[in-house]
Length: 95
Image (cartoon, rainbow, N blue to C red):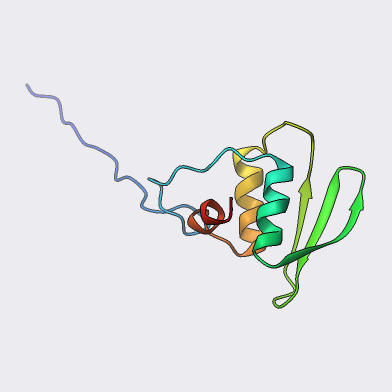
């Protein structure tokens, strides 16, 4: 008697539309703030470690926590990219 084998289908994309084959870069909060500024965001306030940025045209707002030398966690970075309206490819180009 043979065992039935099956494979689960692999998801083709993530929540923000990025393909799963793309590698998410390891980014610190400071590097993300610099990349967002290149994308047209402006720092409107800093309170403690929280940098709040707003895009000049789209009025999108992103809050980035900057801790020296500590990379942002994967889920946190993906949420910030979604708030900013950026894809992983766009982030890579801005870094």
